Length: 345
Ligand SMILES: Nc1nc2c(ncn2[C@@H]2O[C@H](COP(=O)(O)OP(=O)(O)O)[C@@H](O)[C@H]2O)c(=O)[nH]1
Ligand SMILES: [Mg+2]
Image 1 (cartoon, rainbow, N blue to C red):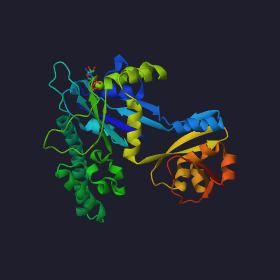
Image 2: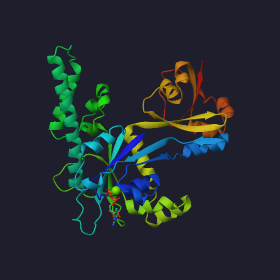
Image 3: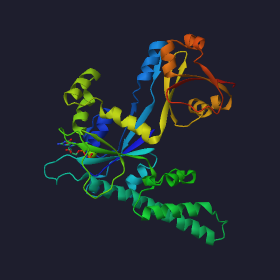
Image 4: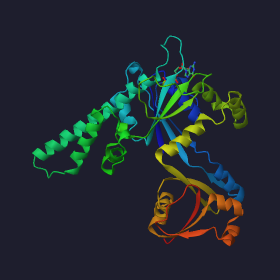
């Protein structure tokens, strides 16, 4: 899973990126794009490690990507260049300044949000118009018309012209024939209010305005300071500010919900591993996530809920209790399932 971080200059993107990835900026490369991959924390994986004592534990991974404006573009909002670089992200985090900064007017997160979100919408409009014109030109040149695609593109165009991003029209945003365009306003978005050090609340919505995004308030500057601490120290530091769970963890959890993702686990002789699957995915999808051979030669899946396995304390005991089930290709995988795929090669 790859998540792009966007926000106006000075909103605290770099800071949030560092809080999420526990990295520091190289001062010599201030205007370079940054990318960082982190393990998805999961207590259940630790539980399984306790039971199976594997040589290796592999967490699911999330990659954060922070595109930077070039030095000559500091006061421009988003250009086509950034738009193209975040195109392959599965979701976006939109960072909003919600702290006071010397020399800047007071924070206006909702206005800032609208300003940059509009850029995403505009970017999509340009992509759609180019494509619509292109198809129209093809048709005039006598190419066999495809009725579905132009209709779909026009439906998106209409949605955007009302000022609404495509993510507000889920049936359009998730349409399989739009996938190739990777439209920016169709991506799931998590809005992060970047608060000052002494403020834990999301800002109040100005009276009369509407705002229906998924939001999370964090204190970026505090959380960034964790980047170089070890875990116990970090936890103590956070609880000193009344923060029970780090921004890094909260953001990942919310991203999973936002993207409709679940986790399942595999236990091989020397490796316990977490995998990510779209909610509603089947045992066959799970097999395909692990290895194409497993999908091709799928026979059946041996499945146990994480909770049942923990209660039994071991797989043989769980088998005795009858909590290990045999499931076929179409079984709908549940969050926390521990799965063994039986397959032919
Ligand atoms: N006082 C205060 N300053 C912050 C906070 N978060 C970020 N800043 C400052 O805001 C400025 C812009 O942050 P930065 O992460 O570089 O923003 P970016 O341009 O979006 O990458 C920096 O000088 C930060 O030190 C905060 O929570 N409180
Ligand atoms: Mg920055």
